[in-house]
Amino acid sequence: MTSLRPPYTGRSPSWPAIGHPCPHCGEVTPGGAVGALCQACEHALARQASLVGRVGALVTTLLLSGYLVLALRSVPAARAGTARLVGATAVAAWYLLTARIVRRIASEWLRAARS
Image (cartoon, rainbow, N blue to C red):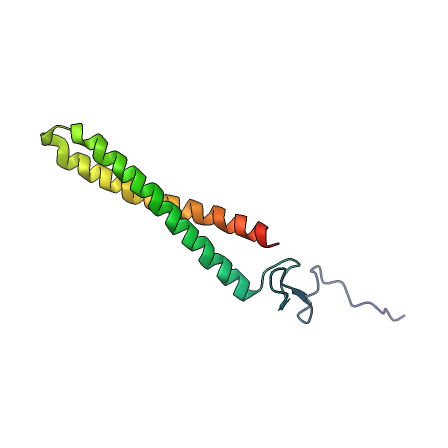
């Protein structure tokens, strides 16, 4: 007896010829999931999220550094060098972490806004 269905291999079949339109620009994206952005839209979204992340991190870092300048004026002269070093390290760490967090939030927000 001949079966019309192919044998079961335990994995889902791949459909390389099937594509779905990008929800933003409408370009057919082969092999992507339904609702996935095309490569050009994904790149544009990443660039925009990166810009928002850098600007957000810069603004908050400037505010933090201004606060530290004002707060570290009352540190005794004998410990001023150490206080400045710790403050500079905190500002650098703040910028890096804030940029990463804001970039991720902006990416998710922009992705939701585009669909």
